[in-house]
Image 1: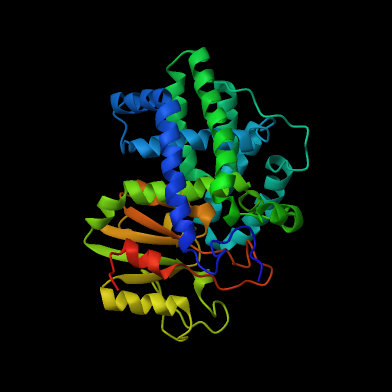
Image 2: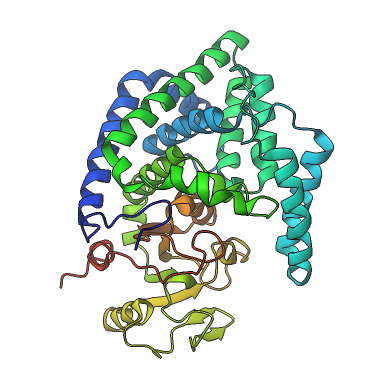
Length: 386
């Protein structure tokens, strides 16, 4: 069966992917350390002098700088005509859909119309990438915030905006241009290194994506191929920088998406509790069941969530978001950076394992197919030796 957007199983296994992304991450970090060391170091010094909380690791600074360039190239043209009142309306609607779940379908209906009308500009080929300056940086931030899909990325980029506001116009413009230049290098090299895992993205955007027009997921499902590669890189970097913190936690929890259930929304007998949803073991062939049994044998919990927002909407100290908990988050590729930074903001050290492919009916597959992961990679993260 041909997979929508991405698939790690190009050789009937995702083993080669984890080798390729590890090697490519080293290449990107080396490139950043050589050519983009100065702006990253300047930003880090500003971060320390400003006494900002949660000072990122050097590797995260490099990821953030690359993120700035990729999002600028991908969305600055869309931000050209962003209007303040539309921006604020979309932000408020996004907040309301999380707070008032009983009217979420109605809110999403209006969000879909506004997102497609005002933010989604794929049909307009004449829009040009904005000039690299602070005025346009502000426009980009407004657009990203209004989309509702980059909440934790925006928080990181706002720190960069504050840093660039402290230096001269010429210097700030030069640094933004360097980020854009690096993102072009990244786009080209990522296709060569890991592009074989995302060959279907362009086909999906051309053939399947238009059905998402006028729906609230129109921005999320329209993400570019380079953003898949950026999230793959981000997941690898975060696994590295948060590794020791994760190991030092007292308890471990595996968070699985509902799309991994073989019988989700049909005959699945999942147990719903205040702390999360738990597998009841109803289907021996279901991977959720297999991972749950692995958890019982190795003293970690396995929780199933319908969507990443189920975690981001939880208050700190409730559910799984408790002190000294290490989380292994299983997610499709476009949720890796936002998910990792969401948990880090709550002082939770996380590791991620990618779904081998995406398959949920809401976003990716017209019928919905059960997804899976590389069990050996999960065991490696959890230090399970057999």
